[in-house]
Length: 328
Image (tube, rainbow, N blue to C red):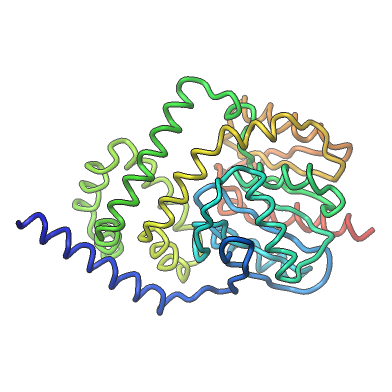
């Protein structure tokens, strides 16, 4: 009986919290129908080309907050949230790479953000950018890939990679359940209030070794402007976003296979590698750069995987050079 009451109380707490989040954190941009659901798009600046920011697999438009405003001084820019993530709505179609590409293209067209387009993508987002450029090369005038995920590693994942993927999907679905019961919200509220021991205990019980990964992500988020922290926290409290992570992870091998089979991109391409990238990752980045006649690979020292947070000035410079090159 007590357990049932606790579950009901948690669900009510979560519902009230979601209602509060919607009032406190309206979308910075606008919601545009991309076919099957509305996606959040945040456009800033004026001019051409249009710089399109594509986030990592579980990240949102907020992950570009140190970069987009600076690039918007130079040209038109747009960041967005993929279906299920951030302020965007769920779209029930499978999360394979071609579906994601078509949703992005529909979003840009319906939002009046025509070409030419420079695609700037982080991690998993590079798969989306590369697939877009392969299918619609006439619409793309350049790409900047920020520590892109190695497509070849996920197209035919090793046993350890498959285990990692299964665990990621499991933890995402577990997170959806915990979020729906208000447990994620309560834990993050305690953490934001300064508590440490209880939130860490909850993280360990719910995700085991995944708690270390959660702490690493939190450390990266703290590099963003303080004003966006509560917005990101509200997204982490939303069961929808956890389900979205699970669906993108489930489609990752299929999506990576599509990109791994393409070896020519007829547009200028800059690949930025993290300073702590593995030898295998750097080899993949060099291979990607060679897929373009105007390709180059740069190792960004003193940076981890989230280069746009560790060294945003390097990312801004790479984009600025690509914009100027497209205007020649």
